[in-house]
Image 1 (tube, rainbow, N blue to C red):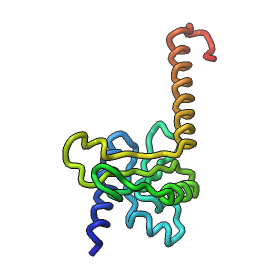
Image 2: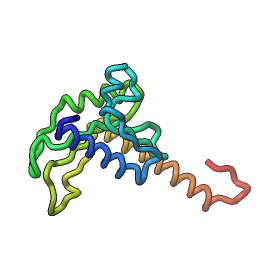
Image 3: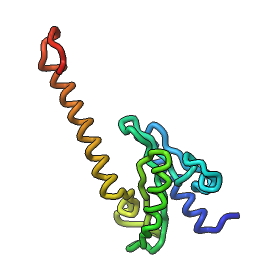
Image 4: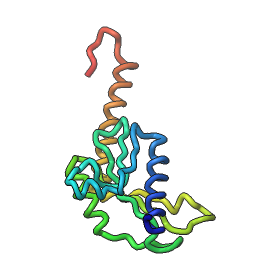
Length: 153
């Protein structure tokens, strides 16, 4: 049987996957928290959770961490970020780390759950969203401001 901390970590992976599934095409927890993929060298089976969205051109591969402190502070390790970046790079995923503070049972419970991206990945995502928004603006402008016989830009 797995240790209690391992069980709690697995519970956070399942919870995150379920919450993200509300707006995702797919959201799945990777069996064995990605250990099988690491052992067999199968990039698609690494990380803890993989999420795809209809508007993103790549999946997000997430490393999940629970605890590592208490309800008010948490130690974050750079090695987690390095690991998920390397795993995500192997199959062109966007890397992220999710964290959940331990023992938060009252107050602003949602402030205990976060998803972290590197600054470079965040900027790449925002650039991608800006392009999508610009394309959408161009489409609506063309659709409602041009005559039927005009060619779109």
